[in-house]
Length: 182
Image (cartoon, rainbow, N blue to C red; front, side, top):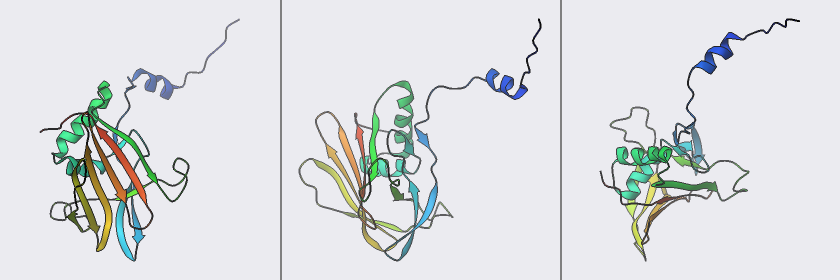
């Protein structure tokens, strides 16, 4: 008895193309407009854990006072098993941390370089206490103390906290296991 098999050409072609099993750690995320305290703010959705949004690189570079390319390179090293920069979590504090809505953070951009940039921001240094090496409040579109960025230094690593203070509260936490230099 001879049985005929129907071969789907699309499946055959797609299976012949090598697919990477390596996960992407730096991804593009959706940008949305949010109404916060009467002002319109362009925000991005921060992935909950492990994966970084391309917009988060600006926050990490500011907190570590290094270049964007260095941060991107270190994030890409996660593919090789090197855990230089790790994202612990990004959660909203007004709902269930793992089942609710995602944390949104304002997009930080330079209006001189990016024509689509809608957010104005100013950084105001805040008091350094204990093992803090960087601390600043960000004013976004006239909303004072919208965010607080803090970098803590420990003997073996750095910890970065991005705390959203305006609208709803939320926090994103990262660890950096090496000193980053360009």
